[in-house]
Length: 183
Image 1 (cartoon, rainbow, N blue to C red):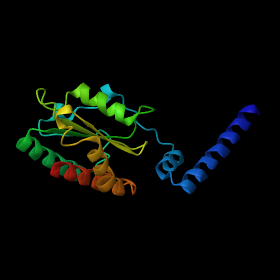
Image 2: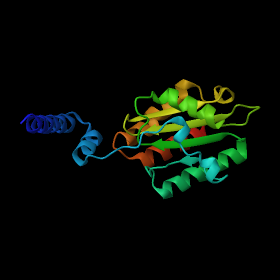
Image 3: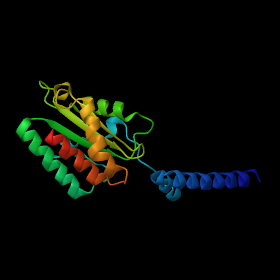
Image 4: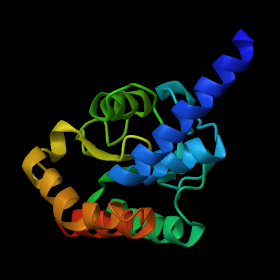
């Protein structure tokens, strides 16, 4: 009888969570609950480095959050940026990093991969974390004059977040990359 009561209680809690999520706009969380999806949670050492795959790949997209045509477009823009200014930019799109703070995760990943030219420290990592609905920039010291935190935040707010709010990860990331390259 106790087991039946626990199952019934879990069912009621589940329904209440779904109603709460749909009511207050956490649609992605509600869908995950509804379909009982498991989400891959990444640690810094688990994220595949796109440069190990190909020297012309700048996007780590292990769960195909970004469509392949957009990955191609981002890779093209970032290759041109690296060719013209020797700035290395890497884009990472992950479903989850667990309870880690995106900014800290991005900085650890930036250091782990050694993004940017060592002598110039001119790298940039752009991290998208779906379950936390966060986009974060981690810059090397050599880029801080061109891309200080305030400019990075402005790029996110003006060019990326309007798309990301609508779960349009592709357009949001492309708009942010374009704005970053123009900067």
